[in-house]
Length: 323
Image (cartoon, rainbow, N blue to C red; front, top):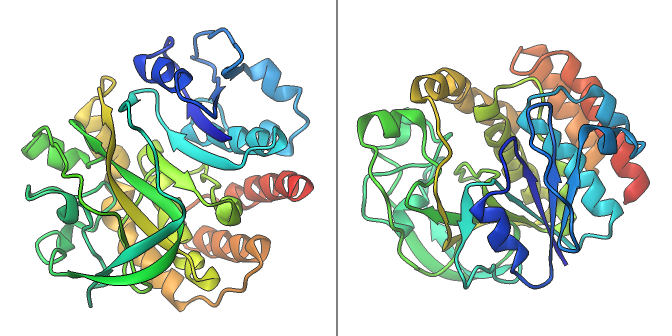
């Protein structure tokens, strides 16, 4: 069973209705202060703020309202409900009829000597890059080859047609609709990074402790920061980030692009510093230990607020009881 985790402030969307039609899928909608009440059914569970308070999770009291990180409550609830797999998406990413992901194995890998690799270029000839990609690398990040080798995947990132996950600068300058190619899935090797998001991603159960979304960053940075952390630590488990062709399309909810730009400044200025920190740190195979050391370091340099460590510890405490 795949548990689809969405936080929404909108009425029931076309995307949610389409996920309801999928087999072996359970949808978890995490409410917030601005959310509309959506009726639960046998395929969908809507957790209102009051419902969340009744769950007994420590994170509920610490997680801020009106923040995307309330998805953390959904991850825990999914595990409590016996989720085999956790799928992250938003209420405006509509699955195609053939929506699916491969098993967590990939037989093709990008071969590159670059630290940052724009994997979008494997699926498109357009000049396009993912949100969270270092801006000073976008002209030099597409020089790679594809080689045959088997890799176990830690997280699958799917492409999204029409309005893919790009940054505000791309939309302000180009704002083109994109249709990606259905090319073969590819894995990124250790030592190469490409941001992944929370809009079309399937998590290997082995990595669920790293699904935590930080609460003290902007909405536009929280999943990007998480993604870079996850990429680095998954190599300790001999797991890798994989990309698949388009299996959803986005009918994007209204956005103020200048507000998005403001919220993404953390991405533009912080990603390379984050990667340098992660590459210098030593990690074990203990996710609780790794997460604590990472967020203490990030708090010490002001990339997250000092409160983040206590919020994380509440989530880890809840998680430990479920694993």
